[in-house]
Image (cartoon, rainbow, N blue to C red; front, top):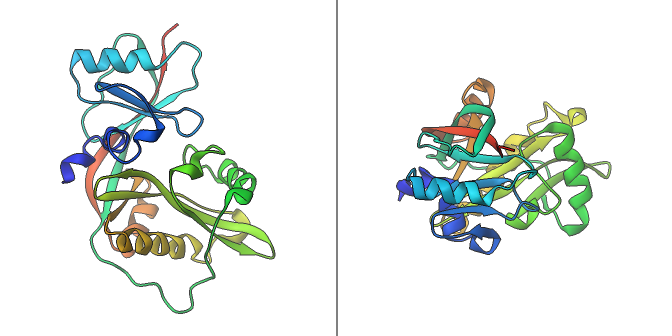
Length: 228
């Protein structure tokens, strides 16, 4: 089953999130209004050519994310590359009784969610990203203090993503509480929770280890555009 995680974006688009998919049997991308992620099925010349065709001149940058080494066709250029880690929950850590009140977020909360994501930069997030899964939030004095939810959804696995805390409320353990809350919801549905972090974000990796996650593998990230 973990083979699906080698090309996790492809696996999501080819299984449970096909409704958001554009492309064919060789390359797929999310509807760009929902998410900027794309993937080729493999590293064959045919699949890479199909990926290139999906990304048009003038498109916003597209994100590639996979454990396999990223190879680009001649028509695509990388604006940024980075090394990350994919972490899988190994131990279910129970939430403590004094946890903060966590509530589901709805369509009415989307403007605040986008504003919080723009402020804290947890990763690509649009006003349609919440369609990919269920998001939860913590409010203080009516303000959205923190949020987190699910993004990539594939057979047997679901990704915890969009975790962020407003600077006014950092240091209160809200991100940890949300991570455990979302992970419990994923387990209750019979799936294994996973998440991503940049490989040099040692603080985040250490925190996720305390919350029961372990590194499954390193992953490659590339932000790409079509060459003019």
